[in-house]
Every structure is written in C-alpha cells, then in structure tokens.
Image (cartoon, rainbow over all chains, first blue to last red; front, side, top):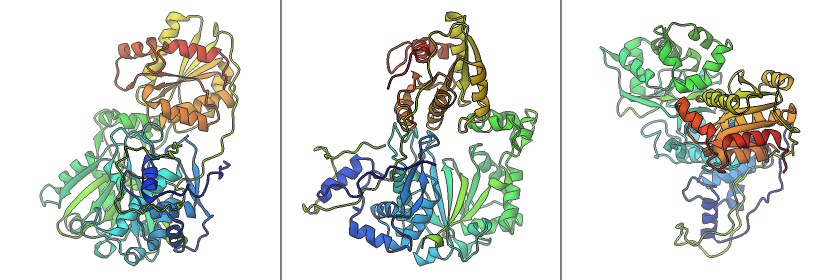
Amino acid sequence: MAEFDRSSPRLLEPDTEDNLQRQFIENNWTDGLPIVLPTEKRVAAMLAATSRKPDDVVGHMQATEFRGAWEYTVEKVAVNAVMAGARPEYFPVILAVAASEVSARGSTSSSSSAMVVVNGPIRREIKMNSGTGAMGPYNHANATIGRAYGLLSQNLQGGSEPGVTFMGSQGNNYTYNNLTFAENEERSPWEPLHVQKGCKPTDSTVSIFYGCRSTTFCLGLREKHWREHVRDMLIGIDGHSAPCLLLDPITAQQFIDRGAFDTKAKLTRWLHETAQMPAARYWDLQLVQNYVYPWATFGKEPMATWLKAKDDELINHFPESEINVVVVGGETNGYWRIMGTRYRKTVSIDAWR
Amino acid sequence: MNKIVNTPSPDSTVSIADATEDKITVLSPLGFPPKVSKKTAAPRPESLDGKMVYLVDCRFDDSIELLKQVQGWFAEHMPTVKTKIVSLSTTYQHDDPKTWDEIKANGAAAIVGVGHCSTCAPGVATHAITLETRYGVPTVAIHTDKFDRVVASVTKMAGLPEARRAFVPQPVMGKSADELKAYVYGKDPLTGIPVMQEVIAGLTTALSA
C-alpha cells in the first residue's frame, strides 16, 4: 500500500490577484484560461455543500499506468471546483466524478477525452441541460462541472504538462469540458443509462466514459438505406474503441419506428450484429495490433475466436456489452452521432451529498 | 510533478484590469504525491562474453522490429553474446512475472524496448526497474527521444532515477528494417553517444546515483 507525502503547504504565499492568476497559469494548474481564485472563504462555501469531512480521502489518480497515483481529499477537490467556477450545489456531482478515479487528463499520445453523463434527480436540482445545446457551452452546471473534472484531474494526479505528464500528440478540444451533460430522460423512449447500469431511476449518478476521439455523424434515419448508413458510421469508429450512440430524442424514436428497437438492449444487439469488418483488415489496425492481438494470442475471448477467422471472413468486432446508447438533445432536428469511447464506471452522487 | 513557479514572468499577458493590489491567500490545488522509496540496481557483470542477453519486446508499434536490429548488432559486433527476443505475455500495461522468471533463470542481462508512447514509455521504464530491483537482472531500457522527460519522471518516482536507458529517434512505427538499423547503429539523439555503446555500458558498468 502506497504512502503519500502530505508535507506540501495547504496555503500558497499571499499575493495580489493578478500575480496569483499568473502563478496558476504558469504552473500549469489551469486549462490556460483564468480561474476563480480558491480563497478560504470560497472553498469553505464549497465544502458546506457536502456532509463529507474536508480530510476524507476521495481517491487516487494518475496520468497513466506506472506513473504512481496521487491521493486527494474532499478539500482538494473543492479547491479545484472553485477554480472551475462551479457553484456549491454542484459539488456532490464533482466529488462523484473525482471518486471515479478516472483521469480526464490521461497522458495518452492518442489525445483522448473523457465524457460524463449525469442521470437522476440531480439534473433538475442543479438545472443541468439535457436538451438544446446540452453538449455545448450553454449551461453553467454542464460547463463548470466538466471544467472542474479537467482541473481536478491535472492537479490531483500530479500534473498534465506537455512533454512530461501529457503526451497527447495533437491534443483534444473535448477536454476543455470533457463532454459533460445530462441524459434527456424525460424525452427518451428508453430506460436511462444509470438504470441500465444497475441503479434506481431515483438515484443520481455520473457515468464516466473515456477514449473520446473518433466521432461519426448523421441526420435521422432514411427509410431505404438507414441500415447501411448506420453500418458505415460504425465502421468509421476506430476499431479499438467502442461505439456510444448519442441520439437526439427524434432519432431515438426513429430507431424504434424503423427497426422496432423498443429497448436499448435490442438496439445494441443490432449494432453489434451490424458492425462488421473483414478479419485481415481488422487485425491490421495498429491499435488492434498493440492492444487486442496480444490478448487474442493468449486465448481471451472473443478475440481468440476472431483470430481463427479467415482473412475475408467478417467479424463482429464491437462486443455487444461494450456498446452504449444515450439520449441527449433538444429536438431542433434529428441529428445524432456515434462517439468512439469506452464506458468506465457509474458513481453515486448521493453518496457525496 | 509540476515545477512551482513562484515569481511571475514580467512578460506574462495575464492581467486583471480591476484586480485589487491587496494580497490575498488561496489554497494549493495540488494533490498528495506518493512517497518515493529508493531502490538499488542489480550488480553488473564485467563482461557479457558467452552470456545470454534477453531482448524484451513490449509489443507496441513495431518494437520487435527495432529489437531485431539490436540482435543483428550483437551478431555482427559481439558474436560471443547470445541473444533471445521474447515478447511480453500480454500488453505492456501488465506486469509479467513469468517472463521475468525466465530471464532471471537463463539470462545475464536484459534490454527492454521500445518506450515510444505515453503509456508504453512508463511501462518499459517500470518493467526495466522491476527486472533490476526485484529480479537482480542488469537492464537497459530503449525509448524514443520524445519521451526522455516522461522516462526521467517515471524512474524518479519509481525510486531509481539513474536507471539506464538509451534513446533512438521517433518514430519507430512503420520504419523499414534499414531505417531501424540506422537508429540502432547510430547515435542517441539526446546524448550524441552511439546507441549500442550506451546499451553495453549500461549493462556492464555499475550504476551510481
């Protein structure tokens, strides 16, 4: 069990507001944008929004395997929540995100982003947006919770400094806010994501995805060739990732009208059956060679079976259990997209109230 | 770990026009780092003559292709040294005691490579330190030059900052056999020292902190 060095000072040297803003930016403690300075008064207000004690350990996080995870407390999360401009009523959500221990500032050279889906009553309590513009900069809770996730990740894991603790070759604009939004449960024809993951509808949760890079996009489902169009979109997602459908409610209803998918499970089964690639082409993908092939050679299923396929044999390369569907959007039109990203975990917000 | 900058640079562009000149106190946003336990490297043999050197493939992006060139270099320049290429049992993200046991039982030294991505460079560095400190096998890690600072921070946090390593140019992925041979037979782009000279010295010269 690792031990942690708590000798660093809790407070920084007093200075002017201008100088402190510079210090935070020059130390790579921000996302390059100005922050709300975490004064004792502001941090105390944040801490008042949870029943947890300031010294309670929330979790451990690192930029990538083998770096050595750092430890963080409720107070440390509160400091970063203040910096992001979050209001105290958002704090249980931010604590739940931090408790996931999934870094939103992973060092991967592939430049991944996290994605955060909020479910349950908390969405309305803190006025999160699940409708028009939910995935854009139009809602204070969505914006600052997502920003807090990024800031707390880089500061609580020991940095996200290009060349040392961040090696994303191109970077990723998604990471400014980490795709943080609420599922549109009210307009979804299906059960919400957190219920799929074993929670009650009345539970408030955050579900964390990681690996957002590839995205494909479409408008609606045309009567004649919708199956082929969806298949093409699935093939456009990188083969090492997993598809997460982000559906406007209009398109969610179209999947029912066109394909009779009256449950998310029926839809994900069909998506699994539809996404196919010739075996030789699949195994020649570099990321598949790096991360899937080694497991296949040691018998892990279903990859081991795929490895036995002939070159031109079609394999269903996205396991059904790894496909997810989330409903989000304001029905201004039936636009939708598939995000290549892996589901990591669902964390209770109520446990951090 | 971030370097703490205490004095703002005078050319900084950040300015808050209406900010007060009063001094205020704020909290540090940083988490708590793990305590570092100093580790001890394995003793070095005086010579590799007649001994087996394992070349450990981390299975990321054509690493094995570069190790084949390392093997070729030994055959050409140090033919008395026996070499064996082994691939990790799974991916570089996992410890591999089975492979380490084989190397400890049959090898006098190891070369692990190639650290050439954000996660495999820390992985290669960590596996090399595992071989050194838990299995007593003198080990050199080969990385690409883009990851020198990553490797330095990982070896420091792992308690063996002096862990031996050599660097070749980035990228390794997709390069021809001749291009990879030029990497191995050429100089470390960071130190200017021939790559294999660094590797042999790393395996036979005692480490000092």
